[in-house]
Image (cartoon, rainbow, N blue to C red; front, side, top):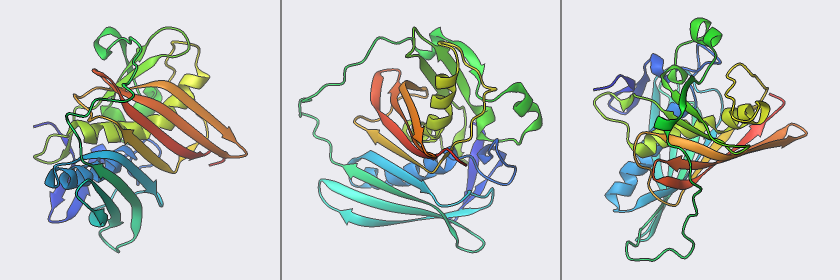
Length: 269
């Protein structure tokens, strides 16, 4: 079994060092909590024979590198749609640190697509060069965490490259990380990756460039289930005005596009 990000004791998730962030030795990376919320949504979807179509995560404050409790409740629970609300709270004092809402829908396997996805031909991860997500200096001097487990493959033609990510970790001790959970974790990178691509020369990956932006949320829209262990960003977009911005990417797996990830950002952070 791969190394894991959390151990689960009853209803409490205890973070390992793999939950850490490059920005602070006392806070978690945003990716692992996204994956915990997706885990809860997938469990609810499996029970109802449905699947997760959308998940939004709102970060209320820096998520501490401390034990967390995840609680869930239904805002709606129907035959064709369920809405699951989830909350991560500090185990020591009950303070909420992040919220999530997942929209869970019933699939219709015989339904012919009205608007099939149109995918450009893009190179897969095996065809591209490997890179580090963070700079060598940060790898040597910064905190440990999820960012150090991420393998990056980057390339493609012109001003619309493809960038692939994977992380060989389990989410919870004794459980493999599902494709949906890994996809949700990777999509926390929407802002930082879009900004780096915007700042760098075409086709060049520069992990030394810094810019003052902080994402406050992540929304992942999925028109089909994620598959495999590699997830890519294409059609990267980022813009801000008077300190408020938006970052957005098309999300891919090795079979093609599967949805979009969007983040609201504070660019005066």
